Figure (cartoon, helix red, strand yellow):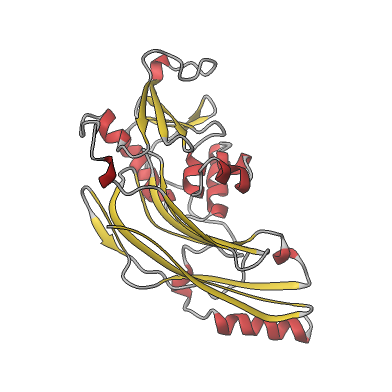
Amino acid sequence: MNKIYLTAFLSILTFIGCSKSDTETLEKNQDTTFNVQFDFQVEVKNDMLSFPTREDYDLALDYLGPMNSQEFEVWENKLGFKSMRSVLPLVERESIGIFDDLLATLLNKEGVIEISGNVLKLNSTQETVSVIDSKEYDKSLGFKNKNSKIFSTDDNVLDILEGIEKQPLALKSRYCPKRKLSWHPNSNVASKVVYQKAGFLNSLVASIQNVNGAFESEKETFGLSLITVGNNFWRNKKRNGTFSKPTSSATSSRKSYRPYYSSRRLTSYRFSVEFKAQEFGQGNQGSFHKRVVTIDCN
């Protein structure tokens, strides 16, 4: 490493300083070895993930929610599953309304998953979830069976299927709508804060990443960070919580943070994130960008 790059790297560490414990769930260049043992049942069936019970699915969310994309890949490989995340490029996923890698990891390429004896298909652009009993599901026919049902991504679909909640007929204006705000400080860096809704998965996620491969170039070095600011919280029908997350000190091509992931929709939340991007390279010594992006629902 020559003197210029050493100076650049040290500047990045000064710019994005924090303790080791603050970086555990942020994506960074590191060994992706982790414990792939889990206490829920899941199998790959008809090219989709199949969870035998709602409890297994909720435990899977607890297990997968804190992970980053590199860890998702290790888990998928362990199962022998080809997810939407691994098959479709990011741009293509976002074009159909799939903004959270957790959701893309649970779905196959067609947006299908099986939970507790029901096969569900997400159409995020139309904000619908089609459901059919697993015994009546025919992959070649899809959801054309007359016994299939259609729900909204606003619904707590699994609660309705279990009879815990009636399918709402009105007052949809009281639900927190899906939300996405983006920030692109330059052609190399993209960031976003999202409330992802899928009927059977609802999540808050923030991410910042390189989009043009400059991190792999010997001529460029980037420092990216994200940190929550202010009083952030979430609330659903049964529970509530607050959250904060410091930034990471390492350079990386992508960082993300997912403070909420549940099969139940949010009734209110605040999610405010400060993004920082600093780049060093030939002809571009120390270009610095910063922006606070906030989404909320009260």
